[in-house]
Length: 441
Image 1 (cartoon, rainbow, N blue to C red):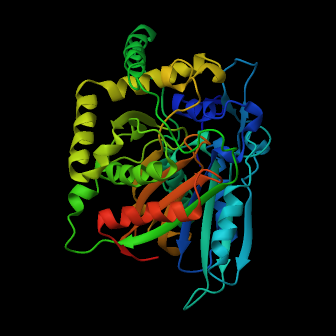
Image 2 (image 1 turned 45 degrees about the vertical axis):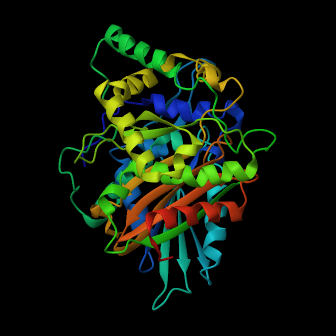
Image 3 (image 1 turned 30 degrees about the horizontal axis):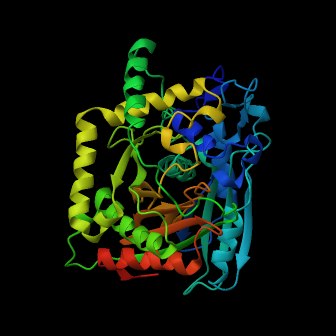
């Protein structure tokens, strides 16, 4: 199998990766605060030996799953560092067994809160949960957990796709003599040109929030354990899926649920601000795996606007259309890359509304459809799959969508103490009611 150019021993963190680290300003505090978990439910037991063999073959061509996070001096560039192939050990693959379906949530919660220390261990790991209570036969749940600055959600799916392809092709590599582009190439534009674009982004960001947003994760709530709640739904045949599948519609729906929470909490009635991530990989292509390949659009709306979801969705769509037309989303992406020249502690201070620690009102993302290439995983049919990212202590809560096997998943992720289980369940109920979905959990 052809090897990756072994002269490439450093993979710099991208701008979006650094923003994730800046959300947690204490460098010593990295760990489970940055975990992202991909949960893949399969229709039968998975053989761990097949995963181990796939890892060994993957590390022959790409070292980053076994790399370590390094910084040469206090303000130096953070990067992933990897040694020679002989020094690379495959990421850990653990196995456990449950005898009742109710135990699954507990196991997943434990896994989500198990810290990753990227300076001393591999930045990702796997867990196989064998469910002996499944009918008509035992099944497995495959859990991939990684340090979020390593890659985004689509990168996690890409990585699993590569491993699965290696498992399916036991002799020859599935990509022949040319491995995929596991990482992206540098921006070929000159520093002067990129600096001009980034400057426009900075000027725009400074005007985004004349009134600082509020979030439920603000003081006096201390950071606690990461928690999540997931529910699956089916869509009635008569439902208008075209409109409701757009991210703007879903942000409006989640905004309505959050407004209800805000009012119960007596939080200030100020404009909501939240980042909408935009995948910058070429459409229709697998794209790079490692690094958060994201640009951001910033949605703004008044809590009172959420009373009329269709009208708010149209307004949010106009905002995004204007941002695309004006090149603002690309400018935000270019500006992110300049963060590698700043220490983490200063990254967010340039934004006027962050002086009191508030960044955004809440997090929300639609992670789209589960890849067709992963309809089967390590020889087993995938029955459902979803992502669970740990959100920063502020805003302290996020809502995430995806689709798999004809079902729509809604995941509410929060930090213990920010909201209660009952409040998280109510957010899901509002989403279900507004989307017109039917419970399929």
